[in-house]
Length: 169
View 1 (cartoon, one colour):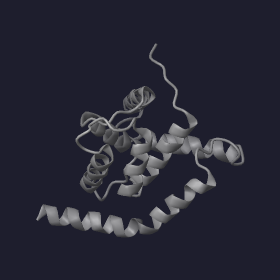
View 2 (cartoon, rainbow, N blue to C red):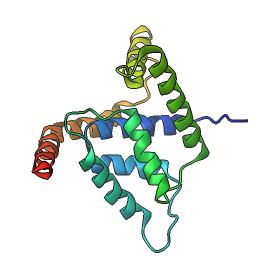
View 3 (cartoon, rainbow, N blue to C red):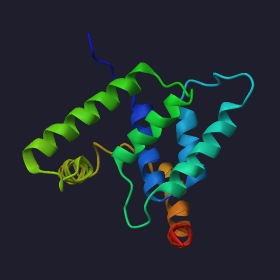
View 4 (spheres, one colour):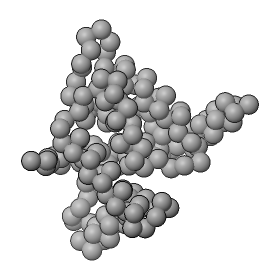
């Protein structure tokens, strides 16, 4: 009764969302959130603008010395849901499964081990074994925006670190 299935497109968008968040690319993150959401819920304010503003503030608040991962993606989607952005039921079950996996891993391996590390290792291992023919959630065309975003990452990171240092003073 408590099962859902993410479509291949939704899985692809979650991977892109995670990559864009890791690169602190606010427009890229906002674009993926909009694709994952169910559309406008508030006729008085455009959901698109709400998402853009919220994502920018969320990324600005991330610690500069920490690489955001899938837990931060879940946290972002949770916070967006609390302000009225709606997501498909499958996303709610994905969140639940993700938190359950994180809890089990925390209990077994301790707080220093993150699910992200294990998921990445599993994916790379399966992808190498299949010679890249399977388990690739992203197409070649998906890598272009990621590469473009990666080119700007050092400047975004520096701005984030400088902004954090200024907020502390």
